[in-house]
Image 1 (cartoon, rainbow, N blue to C red):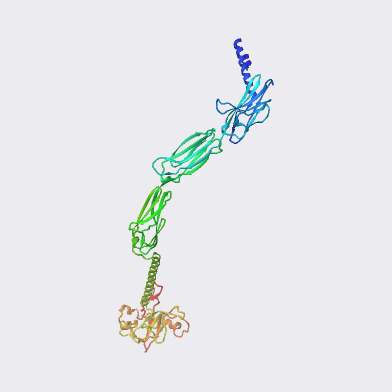
Image 2: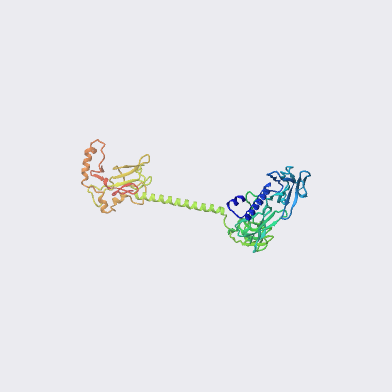
Length: 545
């Protein structure tokens, strides 16, 4: 390289001589460095083994090797021979701390590699392989041995008492590690941490971290997490801990429902205490004095077997732990005796059922009364009543539900009814029932009815009213015979009424021979029928009984 530089850059003879000398010196140093080949750095763990390789490289073969030594430098300025090899005198291990732990791998000067077993943290340092040669003198190469140690990680909680000052509540440690570990905290309780390190005599480092906060009862049981990172670990070490904050009891009484009445059984009060550590004693007392005889206490549970006026008092529950005592009281009010709530529903159900049944009966009676009144208004005779008087006839004939009474006067058709024939026939229009009980109509039929009564009746019949002339002139006129009706009579006689012989329906009136020579005629007009709301059809002119 020096020659190339001189060829490119001409210089004076003096300067050229200096450059040549420098180049020769650098070449000599480079050749010396390359003669002893070693590894620059090695890592190892305690109790393991490590091999320190060393080899002499002689390019020209003119260097004579006399002896090789391994020198250990734990710290700067301290050099100790741990192994020596001489081709004539053999091996030597002058340092007792390495004796029986160091061996030569090859018994030659050209390759004096060694193995150190059962490594210790204190074995860390620089190891130099040094040759004694002729004629160049000593040749050497240095390897740095780094001892690594996995830390012993741990985390623990510190039990504290609730207060107003910041205290240590958790600790985390990475002990005897090399290199030193890093500790972090993961928490949501709002505290802070501090970290310290301690160097060990063997080169290890112990790292400690403390987590601090002002503890409150609410912090008890919350989690904080310690995380340790170090070179020898594949991943961070994570460990959560739960805080332990101790505090005196906080007491409440539960179970009172404001429904204590005389005679109630098994009324219960519970004394609930929030404390850390757990309460050591729970005591029940009463303001009125000793607990009533009906009261049974089982730990934090107070049971009243039978409620009476004696428990109309104030109960006190007192709880104690090592940090203090706390109590709570509740006043129970006893009401007058009440019905058993279990039977109250039955009684209420019975009352409601009775009312519903009563309403049903009333409704049924109302329906029956309404129907009876309608039957009376429409003239439905009761069983056994006659058509004219409402009482049963002697012949046992059933005239059904409705009977229309149609009357005619004497032959002179008197308007005022004074000349009426009281013994004349009565023409009726009936709705009856057949043998099956089905409502049927028998239109334009007639029967002879006499105005005598088989039984005494207070109310006058329709016939009596007509014969007595108590109806007005307009009503009486409806029963008079119109002259135009005579044509219907002739038509009736012609088609079957008089020798016709056919089953021809009768006209809208009937002709019947009465007593004596005079003819009497009652007429029923079909067009005077009128439909009712209940579905029945009645006449506008007839009187129903």
